[in-house]
Image: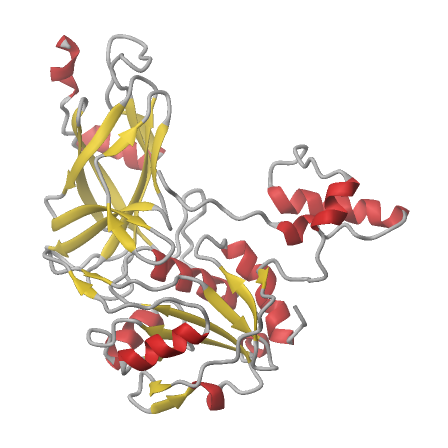
Length: 230
Length: 164
């Protein structure tokens, strides 16, 4: 089986960087919530400080801060949507995928949807979730809207010229290829399955791989809503 | 192996109800206790289909546990869908997979983001609470029928399906 292994949660174990007696109690609580299987946490102090990063996020912090791609496509109302303009100054989650993808795409967008619902309405309004179709021929605005509504009514769906999509993805280091229609009628689209998070400075700061748990999104979205630095 | 014939089982009725209720049940076993060369002893745990978000393209997930000797999941079919195929998600795409090994004393896990079933051509558009029969054919244990419930899109085994 080649199930993607869950990446190590360095950030969580990095939490106990606090000093002093008061920190001990807090660290113990954090350790319990982190792994679920109490008693196993091997984290000696040396290891903890080595893994510690200066970030409150659990997502992978990017060392290269990509710009938001210059991308204008149609939204699910069929109106032109300028990604840079319409998400300017806002925390934004960006994902490339397609609606006839049975596994990774609905799982990822569903997890983000669950995490978004845990936020207050005010927090939700501070994050844009943008899904860009890698199969625009089949993902019409209407198809996209129906699909996204199952995960988040406020999610933005973009579809249009696949060449534009590929070019935009490329600037982010995300691979998108032409979809292939299989003999059985199913469609396979090759697309990088990572989610990129942009902060209000309009730069990508965080990366979420396809094996990211819903708990990680639940942890990070409130920070993104506040625009906390990564 | 003489024990093979009675392991070809299509389960219906009361046993199916038990599968759904308990989440797992021993559905096939051999006379010996296994080891790599012995008979497989398979049970199916946590089968579910997340409600498809649009269209009728769905994924199916389940775990095949094996308390006996090794086996292989060769194919999957369904009386309620024209196509059930085994796929594996990679970092950037999907590839067809199978046959899938069910290791001796181990488990084959079909789970989100990994190896999964792709179900198409439903005879009826799936709805929450529906149950789809999947017929899992193993190289050594024959065919096991599992009734798989349609769960909310974001469902994961072990959580209450409150929809949310």
